[in-house]
Image 1 (cartoon, rainbow over the protein chains, first blue to last red):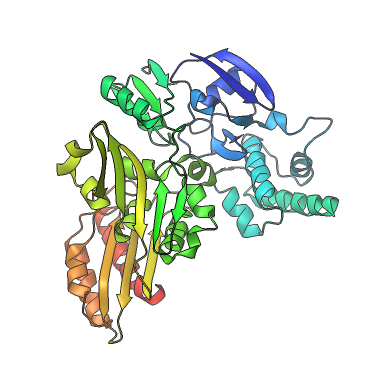
Image 2 (tube, helix red, strand yellow; image 1 turned 45 degrees about the vertical axis):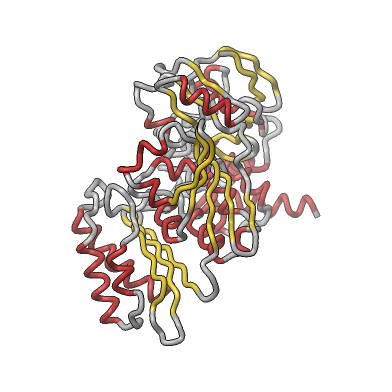
Length: 156
Length: 279
């Protein structure tokens, strides 16, 4: 079946299988930031933003996503112009193996969009669906809170 | 990828959806997709995506809440309006216990009911709120209680029907609401959970006592024996202890990798007694 997908504000028209999942579609289109972890909606490594909300792309049928804005890690910043979250994740030491990082950052981005001044508890709740086996979450939480402060100062 | 799916339909009206449901054998309706995406059998040939249908809303009056069946769990959790009623505030609190942000953004309240998971947080909560369900099929619209829907002897009644709305009525002034869930991590499903609603009258007696538990049997239900026992009784520890014994006599927890039957029973008793300290 043919679908039109809006990925990082770019329109893609493509053929998919009816039972295809968004994670598979994104990765074959070259958006490899979303990772296959558990494939059961538990680990969050496949997290992307759908209509600005974090979802597990391993559980979203690609056809369901038609007509909604899809945002992947590739769309929020570049190596030369990283998103403040990406910059702070790197500078805070919040990235070790990096497998969970795209999903974690997107969950954090969604949080800061709806709650620009989260408490630490609110950050933990927002990223509870992104498992990390490396960092123990301390540095990612630090990076997110630091980003919130910076964005608030920049806005003032 | 689910290679067995032959076609993916996106009906724009409920009548189109119902026509597909009845005419395409081996079809399943898709709401959030959280359950279907990982638990669909190979016998399913067609998916009918309901998300274009207008069943994502809250309609709140002074004593009633109507929720569209396609409303996402996170929309319930984050709604500013639901907390205007105690029943709505209670449902919101429970919605926040469900899995992760990602799952709550996808899962619909209608899907949570249809899945009939024995560990559901939503179903015991809706049961103690005496929730009614509105359905539509090709013969028209009809109403059923959530209890009727969960009763497997009624399963044919709901065949080829689509759940459109939930109706929750505010119980009245002075009611206590309590939900507690015991799970391994914040995003995990319940080992056991408990939902309790009751009133304490001027004589310090329980009235309209309602209780339901999850993780404790294959089909979630109200614990009528406990409800009958406690209604009219004073809130003495001896009565609560006896009620907890009754509760344990009438549950047969599903032993699974999260806990054995014996472990779940011990947890359930603790949660039950705790609900009166904190509810």
